[in-house]
Amino acid sequence: MSYNPIVMKILSAAAVILFIIAFLEGGYIYLTHDLTKRIFLPSYSYTDSLYPHSSSSSQPEDISVGVKGSWLSDTELADPIQTVDIFCFKPSMQCTMTDAAIQESNSFFFSTNTSILEIDRWTEREIVTVPNRFACVEYVYKIDRKSETTSSIRRTTNNTSGLCNGIQKDPIVMTLGDGYKRTGK
Image 1 (cartoon, rainbow, N blue to C red):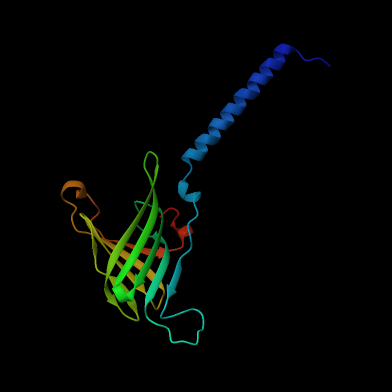
Image 2 (cartoon, rainbow, N blue to C red):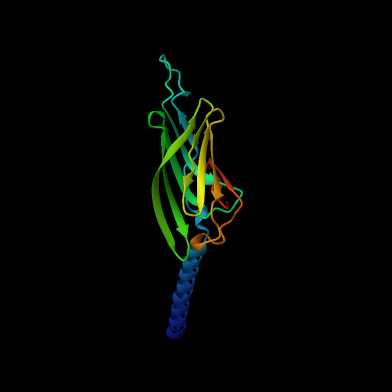
């Protein structure tokens, strides 16, 4: 059986055109798809030297607390794709906070940051940091040792001048939680 060469060329050209359209459409869908649904972040974890989860024969020492997770809030966060690791050490009365975020604008930008947070209060019940101040806002972090939860409150200190102009005045409350729950937050 013989096929008309003109029909074969038309069919070949149509197949190539359909492939190109499918490829471009797939690329468009990939590039415009919500990145928060394609990146998986770690679950929340909590460790406390005073309340170890395993039984040991020695008396636990109140030395350190560590938490990991992603900030969650009812307020839309500037960087919804982020993860945080906070380690607090009582002898120095400091916490080290390391965070990583993917920031979206016209393209994607990956950033990391490490901060030293001074501790205001360390008790068997909670750890609270001294306000971490920036030009426009300040953050206070609290680890509730009984409920094993971590929260942060961002308060605006200046929203009237320079780059601070127009920053939301209402406080933003965040909770450290499972990374997968940050989608759409």
